[in-house]
Image: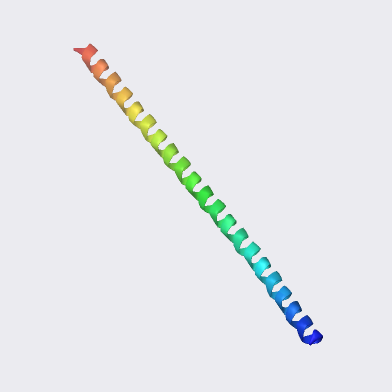
Length: 77
C-alpha cells in the first residue's frame, strides 16, 4: 500500500508540476501576445497620427500656395 500510495502521490505531484509549468507557459504566451498587440496598436496609432499630421501639413502648404497665387494674381491687375 505504501508503494502504491507513493506512486500515486508522486504521480499527483508530477501532474501538478506539469500543470503549473504549462499554466506559466500559457500565461507567458498570453502576456507576450498582449504586449505584441499593444505594440502593433500603438504603432498603428502613431502611423495614423503621422499620416494625419502629414496630410494637414500638405493641405496647409497647398492652401498657403493657393493664397499666395491669388494674391500674386490680384496684384498684377
